[in-house]
Length: 112
Length: 113
Image 1 (tube, chains in turn green, yellow):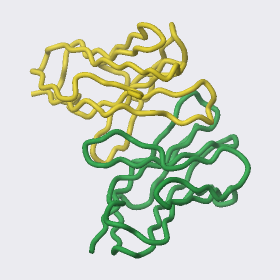
Image 2: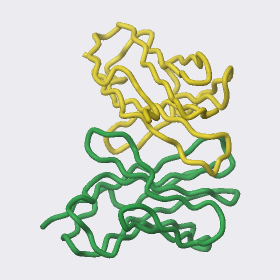
Image 3: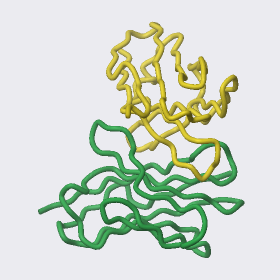
Image 4: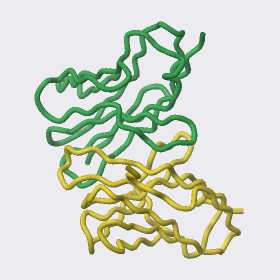
C-alpha cells in the first residue's frame, strides 16, 4: 500500500519568511513523489516531482523539495514567501501502482 | 492548448436525480482519472482508466459509474445523486509511466440538495 501524511492542515508565515511544508510517505518500493499547488477555484498544478537521480528537486516559483529515503520524507521549501504563494499544497506518491495517492493538503497562509 | 477540459463547471441537483460529468483530454494520454475533493480529505480517487477500454475502482467508487468512451474522453455518472456526493470533482490524465505527472481539469462543483 502507499500513503502520504502531510503534517499541518494550515501553515502561516509572514511575507519574506521561510516556507516549510512537511510530507511523509509510506511505500514498499522506491517511490515517485510529487508536489502540487491549488489556487482558489482552480485545478491542481504540478510544482515539482522526484523520480530518480538527484534528491534535491527544484520546481516552479522558487520551490524545492528534498527526497530523504531514510526519513521517508519529501518536504517542500521556499526561502522567502510571497503573498502570491498563498494556496493549498498537496503531496502525492506513486509507488508501483497505477495511480497517485494524495495527502490531505496543507493550506499556506501568507501575511504581509 | 486546452489540456484537460471538464463540463459542466457548476451543477445543482436534487436528491435522486442523475447526471454525467464529461472530461476530455488532448494530450494523447493513456490514463485518465476521476477524483473528488472534500474539505480536509484531500483528493480521493473514484475511478480510473489505465487505457482505452479498461476501468477500475478507486478508493470511493460507490454511487458512481464511468465510461471510457475513447482515448480522449472519460465520463463520470451519478445514477441517483445523494447529498453525500456534494463535492468538487476533478478529472485528470497522465502518460502510461508511473513517473509522469497527472494533469488536472478545472473541476466541477456539484451540490446535491
